[in-house]
Image 1 (tube, rainbow, N blue to C red):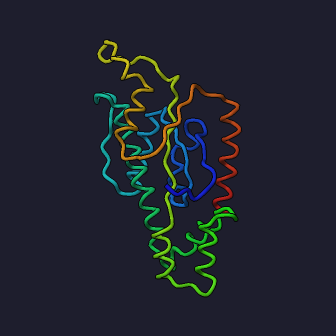
Image 2: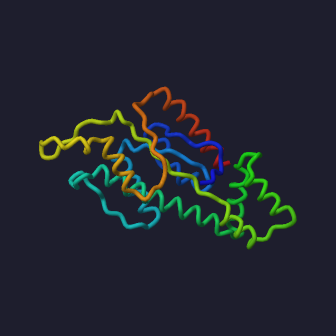
Image 3: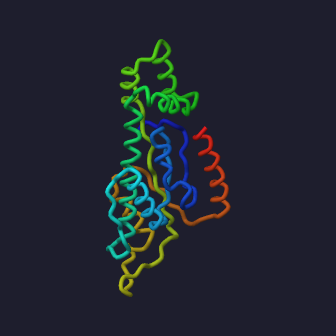
Length: 212
């Protein structure tokens, strides 16, 4: 697969990058989200379902294998919403023109894609030509996931210990595997609070830059 950028946005704690793909995937940027907190994922799935008028049915703790199912449902929703934003961007109209230009401006100066766009638009600006070019050349950023292998506590149902495949880490992997995503899994051993604080500050800075 072609890569638009030479970097990706890593996982930043549990919540900092939980919905980053909705902000950057349409611009070809890869990002990594954490699958640690299924309660948070379920709350976000409800919020985004209501925001975009998508039917929502709660996955409660009473449902068998609820953690994996929550993760699968959230990832599928995230994938659908990011894909729609990307497709909207490619449907070149005067209204989307500024977004496409923003996409191009974010590319590194040595990008072949950026050079091709400048060459295409050097003698004028045809919406039909740009729309065809965008459809053929733009690539959506990957939605990668992070699973903390240290999150391996045993889980119980009606007082009985469940098999090892139902621990939190295994459930997260199963949730990802059953989703529609075709992306990468980043495995990590634990959590460093200093690391989270530093990346949290960088996230705020990045979001401010995107809004200006």
